[in-house]
Length: 217
Ligand code: SAH
Image (cartoon, rainbow, N blue to C red; front, side, top):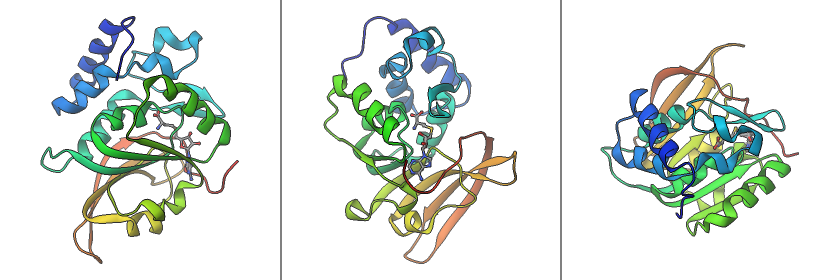
């Protein structure tokens, strides 16, 4: 990825903040140091783009907090092995998809809001990322035609993990999702598919994500 020279120092600084927040995988930190996050938000938010915080992207959605992006992608790596085929639910403006594209063989990213899908397409175009496919649709259904996935990452919180996504996870694959425990509490859930019928679940950090919603708009 050809990264803008402007903000180069800021990108390194952001990777340092993500490291200080607990993310240790050097490839993940390198990817965060490479993707120019300001390109994914409105010009009025450029100055805040290298803070470790979520920011608005319109349509009541946000660009995720970088340390949480880093943490979730780190958790998808089993024994630091490179990622194979990855499915992201909730493209938003495309930032995390760009980070994933540097770490995975292939990335598929689904967005349910047409205007955001189009925005992500526009934002990502200049980077000419060959291993990333953007799909407009309802991520709750997954993407059967490209399954199975070695890793699945949800950028929006549901009451549970949709069954089609569990079905589309490869054996030995990992899924990471924020899941709502109550109106105000969410927790990251890491699921590893151990065999065709066995899934191992581990509840992790408290987080805050926008809701996973069904249907397309
Ligand atoms: N990945 C983004 C985060 C975007 S916020 C980043 O890089 O920062 C989460 C996104 O999930 C929102 O754009 C929202 O519209 C989308 N979303 C919510 N439910 C969805 C669903 N069922 N299918 C696809 N996208 C969904």
